[in-house]
Length: 235
Image (cartoon, rainbow, N blue to C red; front, side):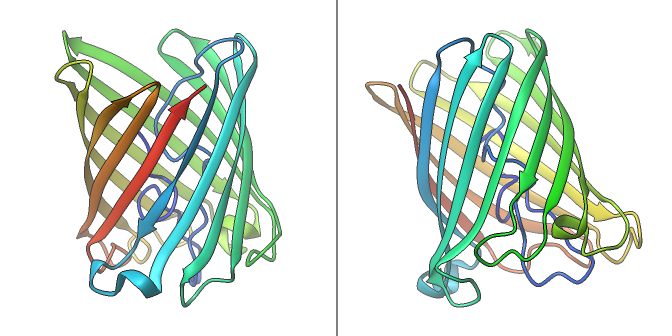
């Protein structure tokens, strides 16, 4: 769905990749919703379906719109089910600024807390285009700066291309293509991953997103099949 740039997919790459901090507080591609809108997400992101109870991150995100053009949010990740992460593994805070009905600029900061020793800064642009009734194309481009994202070398370059098919008011399908690398050594840190996923509306402003992630190409592509279960609720 929208942007799993978080963990696994919209996962960024460090110059010496030992962990992956999300470049955006929002796990999904969602433009600012307007003044007063608030939502929360919570779920599990699994990096290896063959070892779920040792490779899973629990994620929680909350965001609100204090202005008709501005959205602010924060995302927490916990390594309770991940042998390689601390119990509190990361915190990303950020904002989106609407540039129009179909585009926005993004600003995010990964905080040196939990398992993260250094701050990271990401800047990005997002755009949505309606191709025809019920069919859209979302795109997002982000740059990861500072040691918390790039490991002290180069610039992390991250792109999302996301075709969206809305079937009805209950089901939507997404085919996320994630492309990530680092300008210091583009070929060495190239990761091209695919993340098909689906939204299922369960009523009362709640949506369940279920998806998988697959490594397609590049030396840094995802090695194992990943899985996500995230519940989203608008309030």
